[in-house]
Amino acid sequence: MFIAYNTASEREVRQGYMDVVLYPNDITFKTMRPDVWIVEFKYIKADEKQNEEVLDKLESEALKQLEKYAKAHKDRPCHKIFIAATNDRILRMKEI
Image (cartoon, rainbow, N blue to C red):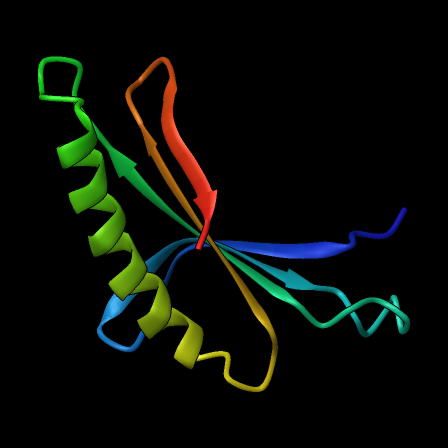
């Protein structure tokens, strides 16, 4: 069995750490698209505010981080995913 994507977590790039990144195994799968997937998680404690204003702020922070991380992969298309969650549910998830 072959692995289509190689995964890494907390990989250091450009003064930060990507939460999760998926790199295509395009050496084995020659016809696979070269896209990289970068996921930024924002955890919200259960007793913290969970309104739209808080989520918008977290999304804005994540966007800045994701843009910075994507620059480290400028030779490949990057999909940037933002997820805000508590310990038991996803509050917002979107591709930026």
